[in-house]
Image 1 (spheres, helix red, strand yellow):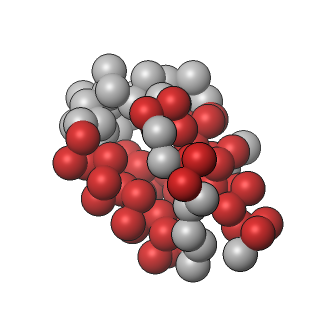
Image 2 (image 1 turned 90 degrees about the horizontal axis):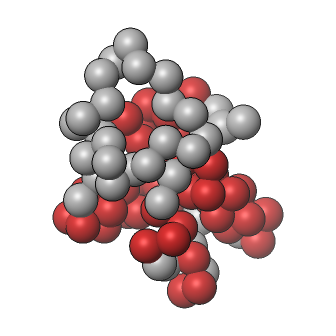
Image 3 (image 1 turned 45 degrees about the horizontal axis):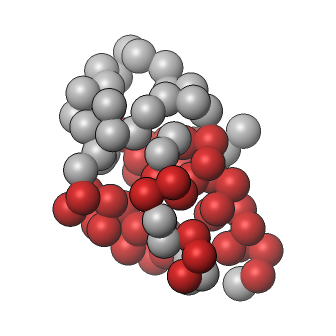
Length: 81
């Protein structure tokens, strides 16, 4: 599973997910309120906070489909950083 920093950052971009609602690996980020501008901002924050650069192949809508997929992409970027 992911660390608390990841969840804290991600929740800032999910206005439709209440604070008491659990963030599950398969939660649909679009359904939870992540829009295109939020996706770009989230990408920048994650790269900054984790000192990584996402590879180009990770910059797709599929990478931002759910917390589980996004954490996998972030973890892979951390390994290569």
